[in-house]
Length: 78
Image (cartoon, helix red, strand yellow):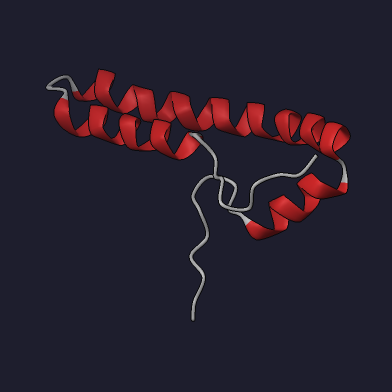
């Protein structure tokens, strides 16, 4: 069971959505609250999720983690 090296976290799209909310809503408190909430949930959820994926996929997922970014895709030079 392999993991696609071209895949990346859907969290990046949620991050962009939260940034858009902060910029577009007239209520700055409500707009930027989404971004703060995203980061809090990301910091709490991600370590547990990665642990479960490592247990399920094993070394395949560890290789995937080395090749990809946690939140945003890594850019390869060259």
